[in-house]
Length: 349
Image 1: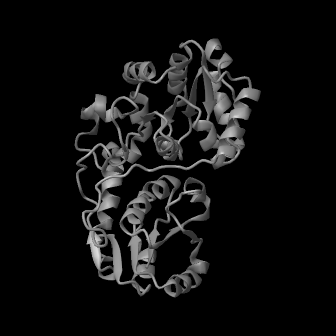
Image 2: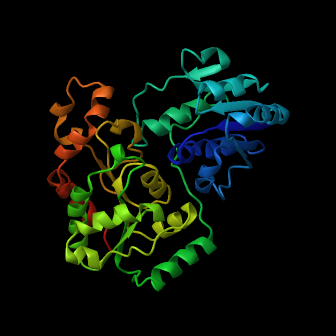
């Protein structure tokens, strides 16, 4: 028996949907389990022991070739966790007995089973996890409601990261914090002068080292951020130690006491490494959708709506996106500092 899971989207989504494989392997140990993803997301599922094969979808030019490949596999079931028009067509034409996806009016006829995205989470796993787990119900009796995403690093990857930290001048017994300073877009990036205030708060702790999640093309923006920091903070920043690939970033993060910064893929990857996280949500985002495994201790998040709900009253999603920068201006570090201080006390060597 072969089962295909489709999740052609961003890294965080691919990582989150990978939970389905652990449940599938438990219920169907003999099955061949395949995952259809975009090539740039491969890093978060490398070495995953529950996935037998990765299939890479690229662009419209390869659509028919991809469809032919999927039909030739003769899948017993396809779980389309992406559920777009394109993936629903692939699922529908696959020949699979079970065609499972999320319920949308315009794709509903393409599936044998559909499930709503509109649900309230029952556990601290969060809606993003529980929405995906319900997709297993047609092929797993008593399907689990939650499983935590996991990233699997090799010993060689961890050894290389450890060597980089030591060579870079970091003492491993110090508290090491990875900072997610830049979101996936400007609208998902906490204002840099505000973030600098939080970095000063972090650096005020004794024996602290600060790393950044960035790529060389973003170095100028990171340097601008550092320019807002005080002298003590600048002294504790190790800008030259960074992940030159996603796997290197993951390995470095595995040695950190926590990741702190903008909500996004890096936060979810840290959670999958069991590294504590402190996430700052962009004002237009719905915190309930992505506060995965938040417990107020190891995983914490803050949203402007937590402090000033009146700013969101009677505002549509379009309004929030239009006003995002004005809302960010109101999201002062003063709102966050107490919560960050408590988080640091719980997650500091």
